[in-house]
Amino acid sequence: MKKTLQRAGLILVLAGSTLTTLTGCFPLVAGGVVTGVLVAADRRTPGTVAEDQGIEVKAANRIQDNLGERAHVNVTSYNRQVLLTGEVPSAQDKQLAEKVASGVENVRNIVNELAIMGNSTLTQRSSDSLVTGRVKAALIDAQDLFANSFKVVTEHGTTYIMGRVTQREADRATAIIRGTDGVQRLVRVLEIISEDELARIVPAQAQAK
Image 1 (tube, helix red, strand yellow):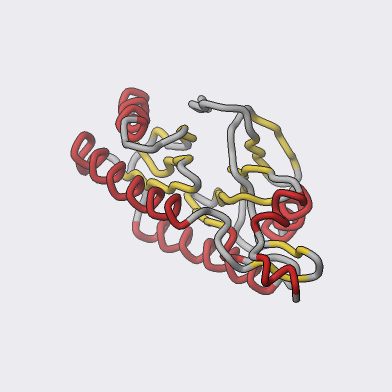
Image 2 (cartoon, helix red, strand yellow):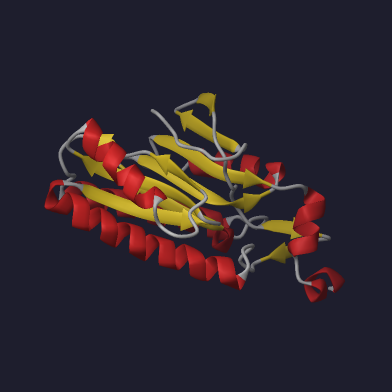
């Protein structure tokens, strides 16, 4: 599936036990441990969090204006990187949705995971929501990760995770999610950061504990 990416990064797609590396530009997963302290805070700046919220609303509204009810498109933004999931009836509509989202202010790049097919049913969406809930619960249960460091989306049994994490955190989250009931495929849309960078992100008072 074609991806539009504007800088180097990483997208990893896990289908069953197969791990495939794609071209990407992405943030990574999970919360972490720094000097023995779990990090719960969002790793984005408050300004970036606000930008991501604005991007999601604007992109979703503009796509709706252009595609109407013939498409079902979800927009998820993390650190100004936008993930498009859902269904569109044609390749042209898939490209149009990407073009519209790309035109929203502050968007850095697009990961276009839209499926060309009929809109999902309420039953399918409910099933996907249940899987997302299980994944979030599994991340919360992990003693060495923080669920607040992730965004989790599930479409048609494929679970997508976004965030900014270290390689250690990415690997740990991957192992947890792969073992979660209902996850058929895992796509990691992740920005890998170093342990040193993570330590700088952690509030000074947390590191002092």
